Length: 474
Image (cartoon, rainbow, N blue to C red; front, side):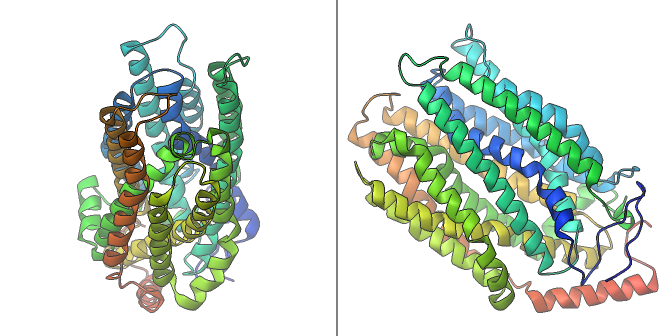
């Protein structure tokens, strides 16, 4: 094992190439994603339905709010990525951002779920707009530096898959916990149930916000960073994102992630609608999502050895094809089809676990290609670019979903006519099927495999031995 370098906080830095990162260090890194996963699951899966059915805000208005929030990310994501790359403090370049995110993330999440009872119409829409935009902006301050830090914890090609596999597990454990919160909200929405969905939402949000803030603070205290990376970002934001766009591997991933995310967003936002208005079993909403989440966690240990044997690219392509097939099958759903939806959700979760692990691991390898070309460590800029594409795509899709529901004649809490049911199933099934198939065809052109990665690290080791780099600061 390579000798660790002491960082500015007096702790030892993560091991370098060839050494496995200790499990305890991975645990510290992934801990905050439990609370963050809970928050994202609740916002992605249930906030739209909570707003339309409880707050009585129109689907089109909520779709526009989600789209506007993603457009704000067009500024916040790249800025957070570039600035965290350039940060130089005693805590490192990523941990100060994690620390700064803790209070805003907690406060804005509570705001999203606690609009005052007196608000209605335009004032309720304004409150939700501020809350949703604030939530995603605060999450940018956490997410971009946190993903970037994961890429810096190890240089090893396969150890990165292990790190992001652990992150995926803990994130989804938080998501499963969020299903309990959803179940509580669904139960509280029944007639004459006390304290009602509004009060229940506030109670859940307060508990989760305190927990998430505490986990972020604990990670800041316990995590370690590699001091040699400090300040080694690009000299200007324009130069950073020019390099991202000039990287052929990154360009391809940007398009693939855009297409995948366009299809995947409808899956999240429409599951409660499918359970209630297509299957006719709103009481099983949490059950269907739990099947998906259990599969996405349970198969993580399978993908790690398969990645070593077959490679990251073939597995990611497999996950896209299986996702396409799983959600393509949703087109055949009808009233009472509990078993069919359960089976398709299981295979969708199995596929989703593979893609969720392979994607950030492949992205980290692409960042190494840039490092060999430029001598700059730009994890923040790269993950900001991919994050923005993901957020923009989901924002577009959620807005599209809201408008389709609005103009197809959707009326909350009532049986839906045939054209509304067809619109829901088209967005839930055919749209993601087409997106994932197209994404698979494009990703087939990706060429940065393990052999290419070894050549990249040979260049980096030679440069490190010579004591120089292209464009980096010491």
